[in-house]
Amino acid sequence: MKFVIILAVVLVGVVILLALVKIQSSPETKDDATAKGSDYEALRSVLSPTERAYLGLLASFLPPGVGVLVKIRLADIFTAKRSLNSERRQAAFSRIQRKHIDFLLVRADDFSPLAGIELDEGRPTSPGAQQHRRFVESVFAKSGLPLMRVQAQEEYNADEMRQQVAALLASLSRPS
Image (cartoon, rainbow, N blue to C red; front, side, top):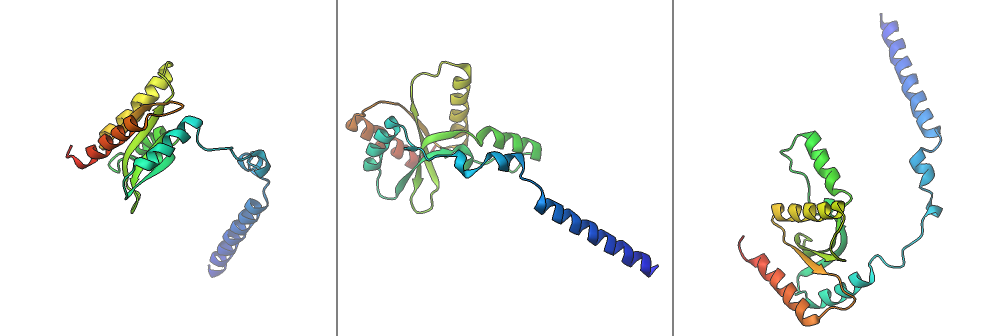
């Protein structure tokens, strides 16, 4: 009887060893094969000209202790509620994982989110663009984070922008 148990343990060990060797020596997966380093090149800038212009002024208006992050995914700001079942949590995560906002104001000491800022390049005309916009607005609103929309421009009026940013920051200190 002991011999049968020892033989079974040895056979299981051999099977596991063979499986590990096969995994290590298997050819590249499709994802690995298409993700060669030579398939990519760096962008000239991660921001559009209108985003760069806005950020340049925005940074000058932020008080000490407030930082700004650019092009941040919603999934880096929000998470699905833990109370949801696993299927619904995964569906909720899938809806936010590939969407981003242009700017996120954060507390500089701990990077906790304060407010989002979206530059609108024009009125969304397609139903998909309108749905995307409503979804992002809803996520921010229901989580209690303010979201400010700004019409994208080649140049921004500094006084007007200073007032908008001041109003946004003032809204953070007011109780909801």
